[in-house]
Length: 124
Image 1 (tube, rainbow, N blue to C red):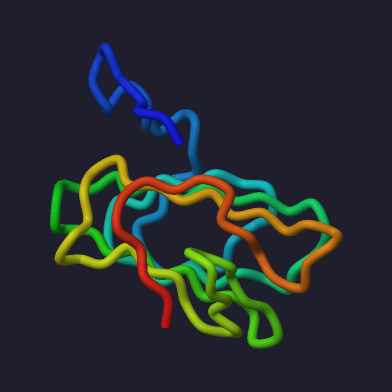
Image 2: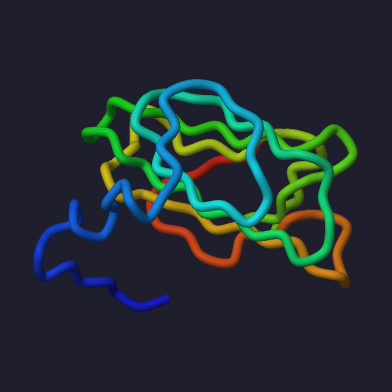
């Protein structure tokens, strides 16, 4: 993964018009991008082939924690481990404005796969 530069600042990259703004707990809609502006738990519906989500932290550093909670029968593959039914989280202590994760579901897997990530994320 290469270094991403934002010549006009990260705020131009995370403009709300490009994302659905999240201000509290929600259930995600497949193939939607989310700008999370306050701490939220995002529940994923049951996995299906070809679904993609991007979640970006739109809060100030250390102010917004994003928790992505897959359906009980699903998981998320991140850093070589599958969080079977458990969460993927952008921790509050390390959260930075502009942190993001993109997850996809592929026909060849029984779980979501992190396809792109920036920042510190953990699994349970």
